[in-house]
Image 1 (cartoon, rainbow, N blue to C red):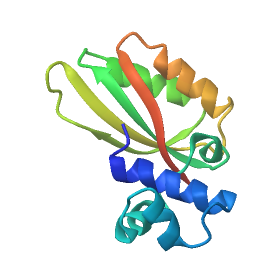
Image 2 (image 1 turned 90 degrees about the horizontal axis):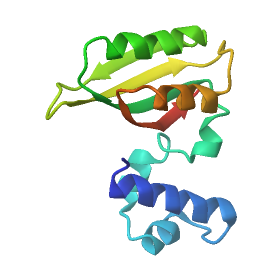
Image 3 (image 1 turned 90 degrees about the vertical axis):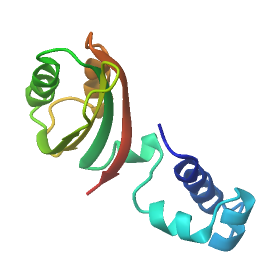
Amino acid sequence: MLTDAMQKTLDAKELLETGRATKVAEAVESVDLSRSAFYKYRDAIFPFHAMIKEQIITLSIHLRDQSGTLSKLLGIVAETEANVLTINQTIPLQGRANITLTIDTGSITVEVRELVKDIKEMDAVDRVEVIGSGS
């Protein structure tokens, strides 16, 4: 799901965090990424383990185009008492649509991993990924 530049940004951030690179220029050169791309994505892309600690998360959800699917998805989110901040849906092409859902998990009643698992178990869901977070 992540673009090549986004994945390389994660790799460069890991090099910096682990001390295998001491400067941004060194890290981006190691992963063959431009500094401008690194700075574009560095504050928006995080490894999954770091994101689940944050209050606001963004999910990318690939759905089959079936009547009532979005409503069921939002019902699952509502059951956890998470607050939906934004919903973006692409026009369904070839029977599939992508939903980008940003939610505030400050009052969530389950672990984020459990919410993602519940969404993945929906019949019409092909894939779910946490693609961003913030507080």
